Image 1 (cartoon, helix red, strand yellow):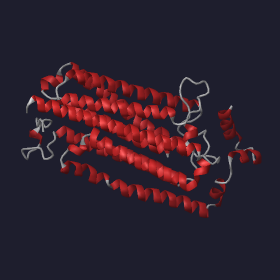
Image 2 (cartoon, chains in turn cyan, orange):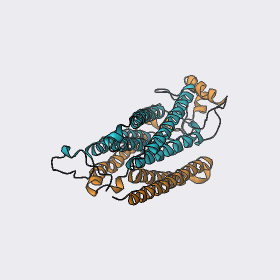
Image 3 (cartoon, each protein chain N blue to C red):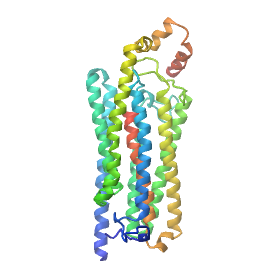
Image 4 (cartoon, rainbow over the protein chains, first blue to last red):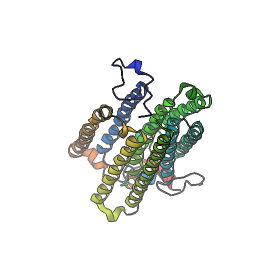
Length: 225
Length: 148
C-alpha cells in the first residue's frame, strides 16, 4: 500500500513492521485503547450506580434548554443533537484532512484542518454554555436541583457523574483542538512536505476520532437512555 | 505507483467517507426520534416498551461506534493481527458491563428488601414531603424556583 512509508523501521528490530504500520501509529492505537479503558471505567461506574438506585432524573427534563432564550426554552434533546452533529462533521473533515495528506494535497489538508478546529471550538462553546446554564440552575458537583423521573427526591449521583464524565470528555476535545492547531502550524511551515509524508496528521486524526467515538457513548448514555 | 491509480484510490476513499457520514447521520437521527418518542408517549409505551426502546438505542450506539472505528479510524483496513491486538483486550468490557451492572442491581435489590427506610423513600414524592414535614423545605424551594 502507498500509505506504508516505513520510515521508522529502525524501531522494529525484526527488520520490518509486523503490522505494516509505522511505530508511532501503533503506539497511538495502544494509547487510545488505554484511554478507552479509562472512559469505560467511568461509564460502567455510572451505570452501576444508576442500577443501584431506585430513581433517576429524566434527561428530557434536565436537558431541554437552548441558548438565546430568557427562560431556557423547552426543546428536549435539540441542543445536544446540534452538538452531536458538530462533532460528527468535524470528524468527517478530519478524515478528509488525513486523506489529503496521503496524496500530498497541502491546500486540502490546511482547509480541512481549519474546519476541524472550528468544529472542535464550536463544540467546546456549546458545552461551556450548557455547563453555565446548568450551574445557574443550581446543578454542580454535590448539588442536584432535579427530581427523579417519578417525582421522588434524587441523589447527587446524577450531577456528579454528568459533570465528571462530560468534563473529562471536554478536556479531551480541548487537547484535540490544541493538537490540531499544532498540526495546522506544522503543515503551513511545510514541515510535512520536507519530511516527505503527512503521517503525523494520521495520528492526530486517530485521537480526534476517538474523541468523537467517546461522545457517541456519552450522548446515548446520558442524554437518551 | 502510477498517478492515475493514486487519483482513483483518493476518489474511492472519499466516496467511502461520504457513505459512512450518511450512515452515521441517519443512525443519529433514528436515535433522536426514539428519544423523543420515549419522552412524548411515556404512558402509552409502558415499562417494557421503554426498556425495548432503550435497548434499540444502545444497539444503535454500538453500530455507530463500529463505523467510526472501522472506517474513520481505518481499523478495518489494517492487518488482522493489528485489529486483534486492539479488539481482543477491549472484549473484556463485555464481562465488565454484565458483572458491574448485575452487582449494582443486586445491591439495590438487597437494600429494597432489608432497608426499610431506603425502601420507603422510593414511594415519597417531593410534593408529599412538603406537606408532611418542613425539614426538606430548602430542597423544595430549589425545585419550585425551577418552575417559576
